Length: 271
View (cartoon, rainbow, N blue to C red):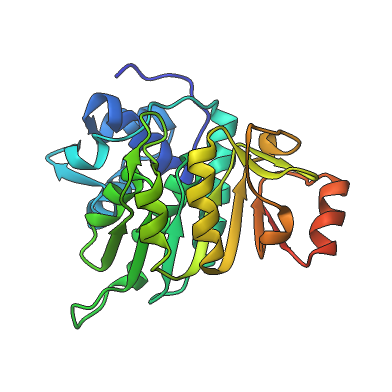
């Protein structure tokens, strides 16, 4: 790996996202190379590697880490700018803090929900002494299931259905039928667009249909969006803004959006 002049990454969530992205392609990283790449001390990198291994995101070796293949075999190819990735990780970190141990948590597919799931299932406070699950995760996306199933203290429930090739989301009658028998404490909803009139939208009606059933079976519905999603409308409607209980959003929100959220008593968390 050739060191670059990448900006310094002081936030742990942003550092981890960068390291895991590199690990997807290289499969092996050294302490020295990561320290140079991120402009941080080797002692900080070693601490990060220890915590990543504890969270079962990677395996430590002499002088570095290697990828756990199953955790990355379904990973999406990075396609965001550095700014978008940093925004996504801020949203994911804030969203993960909304979960308490013992809950049943659902996710649809997407990069922000994947990052949020990674933050949640890696939390140390989910560890239990009696062998019981510290959290139950219901997944509508295969790549999120691979993030969760590696954690011994997380019970992973995967919906059936047909896997979409780009989003890894499970769709169709089998997915919706499975979800109708399940109930969630919190549902995290990733989206392509957040619009005052159209609400949350995505590119696939099949994916939106499964997500709507999950939303209907959740006590708390948390939308996740980066600033670039505001004002965007995609083909398929997921849900109106009124269906949310919370929206976690990066950047300064649009005044019109704030008015609608306030009207429907949706809690806005800006990061």
